[in-house]
Image 1 (tube, rainbow, N blue to C red):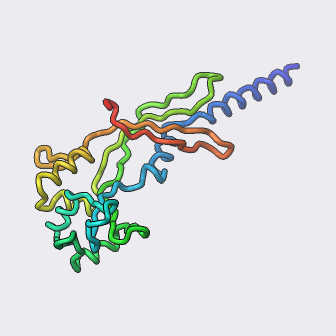
Image 2 (image 1 turned 180 degrees about the vertical axis):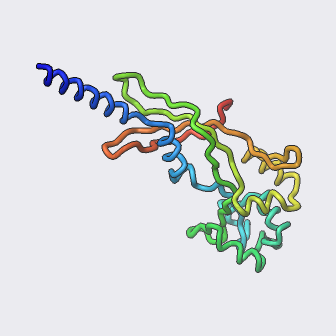
Image 3 (image 1 turned 180 degrees about the horizontal axis):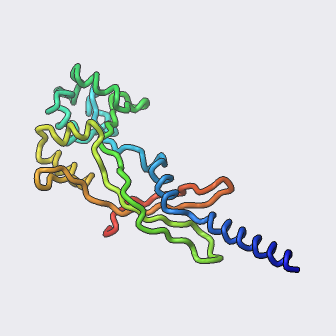
Length: 204
């Protein structure tokens, strides 16, 4: 009887430990967020080169980004739009040209930088649903974003960077606004997966 009692106790301990192992830990949540395709995808600016704007309404690029590229010597203004300079042709190798709309480029400007997990919220027992991880993040410049931010950009371009990325110069140093995001996780037979993200600021 004593042996049976010890065996039951041992099995109970293993069950409890196993259940605990099913929970989403902060390190695991951080790892899955940082390596997810959606989190790591860059934010891109849009410009148009080599095509006219007339008759191509869906080809409209972002004026502020195009102006900055002109100041960097990567684009030149034409009567009908913009064209790549020789330096622009070289730089565009790192841009993403839309195969269905030649001349429309998506230029990686910034990427998300993970901060920390601030909390994990599990669904109520028996309620089902996803486990939510709350975390902090901020933008950081990609190489072209650095060049545009440091270029002799117009006030409109700086205002756009500030609006889109929470970018500003504080005490002579570039800073980015801290954001609070949420990620929904679901546990599958092979482990945890990120189901979706909410990147909005906490005050929005």
